[in-house]
Length: 563
Image 1 (cartoon, rainbow, N blue to C red):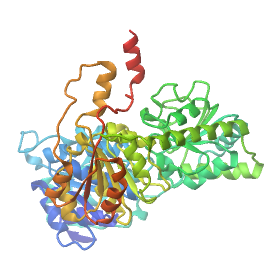
Image 2 (image 1 turned 180 degrees about the horizontal axis):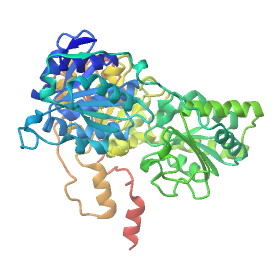
Image 3 (image 1 turned 180 degrees about the vertical axis):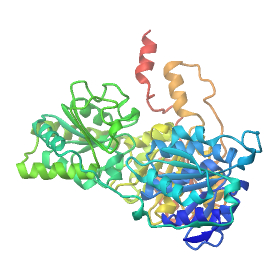
């Protein structure tokens, strides 16, 4: 064993896990860790301008790379500012280790400076929230944190370390490699259930595959596509998981869910058997009702977390396991026993819906006028976005149009807030994703309101030379909320209208590149130039404030109007 300080033990625990970046803000209760990071050749502390940005960058790093992101802050407001970003990681099943200092144990329960009980606040938005109770346990508890974050359905873990423990000058510690204390196991599922699922698919007349986030997480894109090809099953993707399958595949119809493709929803509603692979059929995928998933549909659900199987819809076959391994077992069985393609009429119907979607999106590329329609902005973007680009959508009205209008060819190239739905998400997430995969172009899409939530991270991007591109569609309103008010309370908007600076000029003040696009035809050239300039870039596009997405609760809106 080696003797070291408690702060050094934290850093060595991170090094053992291959951590390259620690996102955060220097603070009084974590100075011993900060000092241990000084002059480290392989771990870099990346200073941000708000703790929420640190958590979101760690999340973006984790989502783009598949390995844990780490953030470090002081106690009290430092920790509470992390919560929204940690919640985003929780909703996205993203492995993030969030570390916060805490007051000395001797002043706890005395309302000391910046004293607050972190654990109850983080518990609902993490897989686990823990306090280090003894300096000598730092190596053990950090191993436990990484084990939890990376096991099963991945997610964030919060670690709270009292300041007086970090002041411990000498502890004995050793740091084995992760292979010695956590095993990456890919459960292949119950063979009898796999057989039952295969038979159900073979006998289906109108089968559909919904590919979810578990496809990316288990690297199962090849297996899901091979299964679709083998049985001629149409493919759709769950909400925010458009990159789970290549969107150019002949059997891919579109994304399902709240802002997804109407054609995908129509197809799913006609299915007699649904293979839900690596998806829990969450709120914005399914709405928990029967608009897309009918009561008559028989569901085969593959999930790494058995708690999610049948949680939102009853299943005909529920298989707990790794999506890649379960699908590979299913493929092997079907090939051994012989499997024919599906009903040609069903395949033709899926092809017709796919073609209808393509015609609809192509028609949006001809919509003229100023201010530009958001749909036209996406049509111009599709012409120039490189296939390896990572796209990050914020919450809000204008980004919502992107779920149905962006195309993906590779896994781990689409990052969204998922059901967390937090504004200000995309820009810091994009910075983390770019650091994880510097070779890939990274493009964030924001509305004007959401961008100003974390605009201060422009300074971080410029200082650290993180060359992402951010497209801001500016309609001077809280678009999603105005859409709701228009539907539910016509002609009675309250608090929905806002004003903004010129975002291209604001970018230049920070030292970034700024572009201003008023005509749709200029969008492609601006995006190409921004991608090539090697600097953080902002492209502002004034868009039509009258063009708003259909509210998620449209059924409620229609009911209210008729009553």
